[in-house]
Every structure is written in C-alpha cells, then in structure tokens.
Image: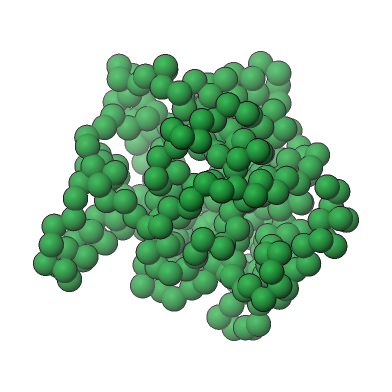
Length: 332
C-alpha cells in the first residue's frame, strides 16, 4: 500500500482539546474512535550532562558484567536478535550509535520510515526513532517519552511551545529530554492516541515483535494501561529497516507481557499487521524479577503504594540475570 492510498483508506481525525490534549491524527479505521499519544522524554532543572553520562556508562558496564557468564545464546529470542544485529552490522545497514548489538538498532533510511510514522503518529527514546520525536514536536503535537530505562522517574512530556527550533532538535535526544521535558507521574490524567516503539525484529504477518531484551517497552505499556491512558484499541507502531522483517517469531512462545504491533513502517512501505495477538492488560507483578524491580524506582513506589492501599502483598517474579546493555563509545 502506498502512502497516498494509506491516507485515503485510513483518514485521520483530530482530537478536540487545545489545552490539555495535543491535536493528534488517529490511525483507527473507525473514525469515531479517539485515542491519545505516547512518545518519549525526561527532565532535570539543574541538569549535569557529564554526571548523567557517567552514571549511564557505569550502569551499562555493571549489567554487562552481570550477564557475561549467564546469558543463553540458544534462547530463541536471542537467536533472532543476534541474527538481525549481525546482519545489520555485516551488511552495513546499521548507522551510529554502533555497534547495534543489545540496542534498538539505528539504520540507513530511519528518517524515511519516520516520515511514514509521523504522517499517521507516538515515540520511544531510541536512536532510530529520533526523527519521529522531532516530527511529532515540529507538527505541534505533544510528545511523551519514557525517562531513560525508567531509572529516575516515569515519563516526561514535551510540547513545541516550550522549545525553539534549536532546542527542539536537542530535546529529541535523551540528554535534551532530561533538560527540557516536564516529568509526569502515574497519577497524571492523560490519554495516549498512538504508541511508537523500537524493535530488533518484527513479523509482518502476525505483528509479533522482539525488542532488545530489557523489557522496558513492555513495562512502559503496562504502566500506561494501569493509568488508563491506553486500551486495546490504541495502535502500536514500530519503525524498522526492511531487513528486520522476519517470519520465524513463534507466536505460541510469546509471553503474556509481550507487546505486538499493529503497524510497521520501513523506509519502503507501511504494513498493517491486523495482529490477533492479545495486548498486555497491565503490569504483571508475578513476572517482574527482584532485579528488574530494583532498577526501576517508579515501579517500586507503585508496588508499595498498591500493597498499602490493598493490605495485600503483591507477587514477585523469579530471580534473573539481567541482559547486557549496548556497548557505548564517547564521540568527540
């Protein structure tokens, strides 16, 4: 389906609220359905870029050490991830930040895929979706973006009227989100029309996807469901290189918290998956390991609050070795 046909067969409808809502085109085939947007950001008024980067690198190194002896390369998800990462590196489809292993891979043509997403629209904090974040802001829409690895908070909100053109470009980076974004909490009343997430691999025939293995997209989705910001009808979009399209993700092996995608945007096409895979209904505490919970302050606080309000202890998932994060190089 070409982009012109996409616009005709999937007309967009503007949300009506000039203050608390952002005018966002809906991707629904039902013009009566109004939803909301999710995108990515972070905030700190006195922001220390050097300290932020040093902390990030230290945590990355710690995670890599923890996984050095325990990762299982034969696990089916990791087999597919490694195949895609290796292909993108050896065929030079990958662009900085490199190497792409253990990250949502940035790729040649990412901006073309972003144009297709932004014509429809939401957005995550990974490199290949940077242009999607910029187009969201430059089109006057409100951008929600998760704070990096959810370490310091939940989401941040960004709007174009908060930024100049120069700061808008910076605000599309993780450092810029930390400087310019407005932090929001789990109690904030928001509605999200569209979610854009990164992927390592995605099956266009089923909508099954694999991220980089850290589970943050699933946790963010679960928290938005908990907030009532999204529901089953909220479209999930991913932008990927054509080589990331696969046909060997076994749907029967997906877990209850895995998030399927409704729409795939590549540099060459827009694919509607018509996925029948159920979307997660919230946070699955019995799947959340103590190690992952220890990484994410907002989840620890939420768990404690729910337990205090209900008088019941929530379950905890089995212990795990957390996967390694991407190798990062400082560029001058």
